[in-house]
Amino acid sequence: MSRPSPSKALVTLASLAVFALAASATGAAAPNNALDAPLTVYTGSIVGNDGQPVRGATVSLFSTDESRSISVYSQPDGTYKLPAVPSGKYKLRVRLMGWLDEWKDLKETTEPTPIQVRLRKAEGWALQSQRPAHNLMNMMEWEDEKDALNFRMMCAYCHQVGTVGFRSPEEPVDWEVMLTRMDGFQGLYKHTQDVLVDKIVDIYG
Image (cartoon, rainbow, N blue to C red; front, side, top):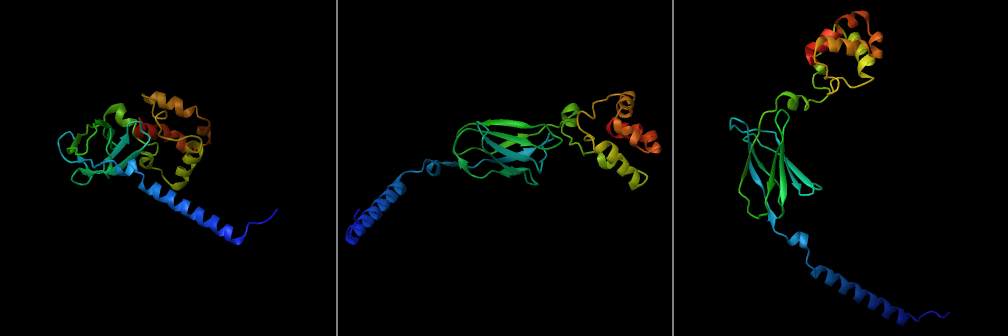
């Protein structure tokens, strides 16, 4: 098979270069709808039941299908400002431990008015369900580190202490039945066995 002459090869390369430049120019001229869409900036404030500002609340903006989100924290004066997002319909959620979640459906607009969200205190089960498992562990006091290590090895190595399921017993007798039936209970020091039920009930009961 004969090879193309150098002159023909140069012509081919030049043609390809011209084609690439033309394609690049066409792509650059095409509109980018995502970038050209108008942007919206949502601002507002977070207050409590008494109308006082709430700091540190997580203010999240979700797309309607909840596939995308962006979050900021409320400032010491309760105000917040979310980054600019393409105009559209969104959902706003405010979350802070000790308070109930608040949701708002936001209509599509390019000039939204400041949005104030009033939080309500969480009580009863709504509050208890927010507690992470380790929340009260540091309140358990032991005579020495050996006792604390013994408790962790016999109890906390098998399951989490302080989960919702762990906190389910309601009466002291229920706690006693649950704790003394655990396999690890027999591995506790005798003096720890004698006081463990009272310790647990005082904190989690």
